[in-house]
Length: 305
Image (tube, rainbow, N blue to C red; front, side, top):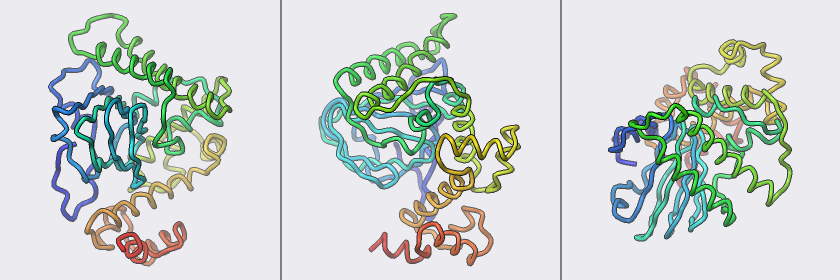
């Protein structure tokens, strides 16, 4: 992730388009990016520079060590460790060993929401939301499978590939990657039951919309209308998938963004409010304190202590 100037600005959003533009590869589908980082290009990775993701994906460590923060949760990762990235996660590379190698797949939210996963509603979005573990260690067979399907995606997703079957091949490899992670978790913890449901698709679309528009729209009715369903149906479906209401999810997004801005920028409270589209400081302070137990100023003071 190369530097962008963000002095007194919010943490910059790092998009798939940014990554495509920095890459020399021409892709068949720019909604999917496969990358590899080896010791020859480690110096191009900006350390201690947080960027917000507008995509979903995973980074797999294959050699050496990497210290990575996701939303300021830090871990030292070794071979067979994987980082899962979700919409609006703040990703920061803290340190990389000289022999570090990693590979990964990044996928747009719109592409992911178009996939259909036959997973029980209680667990499906666990794979595609921030409730799924940010850092995991893969079993040997899962590690081998993830590497294989990542390499196949890299080989297939090239602009000059004219196969009529290419879109379905790419979709199949991505779907299998997700199922491999689900199987790995089922193996270690149990609890995945595979059935058919549409609530998961709705949940993915809702989360994607919230990630894009929470700064400007906080009314559940707005999202229900965008999804062409009733507010009651949206609330019931999201509650079944996440055990949270749509309003609670929206509020969590706002609070998470506020925490990020308070910790990693030099924004004043007034400037922060502008970024989050709050017009009244008392209302913002009350909202933040109701959700965190601290005023924004006290939260910043405690974090930066």
